[in-house]
Image (tube, rainbow, N blue to C red; front, side):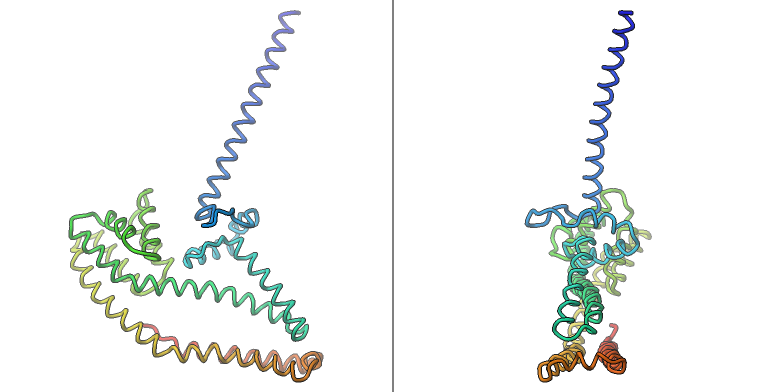
Length: 312
């Protein structure tokens, strides 16, 4: 009986020790997994000010959806220090604020319209930042081509030349090439890394540069001469794009001035005749007239933007 009691106590103690060890291993592994997921999903868990990311739980759930992955790719192309969760939360807050402001200042009918305008403005904000980053990257393409040509002429491999260009060039070219260099360092092929770069920052100039590098890497051709010729071509296209953008600046300003005039007219009418917007949108005919007028302003904005859009 004494031996049985001792055996039972020993087995119980052993189970307790194994249970504690297993619980410790589980909690530490779970913490390491969460830290790895956060590090891989967020480009930098802390911002420049050292604060933690906001809406972390909402961000993790959003990234699992198709819409979240689409937002994540778009944010990666803009270079903004925002997570998809932060962007969507700020957008929803802005939509609610615009809804309340339009309902109180103008009329309750304009609340949903202002909310839709807030969603459009948030998407336009991302597209504008993306286009701005692409333009800045295109402006650095001649320098990228020149640095790669000099590095390959000195006998360096193309992978090494990309890493050296990432260290020498400023943002956004330096950041994007650093991403390509990091992908190459972990075993991704040069074709996949450069193709992802061209997909992230779509432009004809970058597609030409990427195609030149990929074909030269596959066929083993003369990379230096190809990059030299490409540098001259990119310089000419850069000057052409600058001239076209200067010529179309007035047209682009007119496109944004047209809807601004409409909003200003509504505010002026409401100030001159208090309650006029409530009476106007209180009937079905007035609501239809407002929707049609807004549609015409949107149509004019889109038409002017399409006319002024010139592919080079």
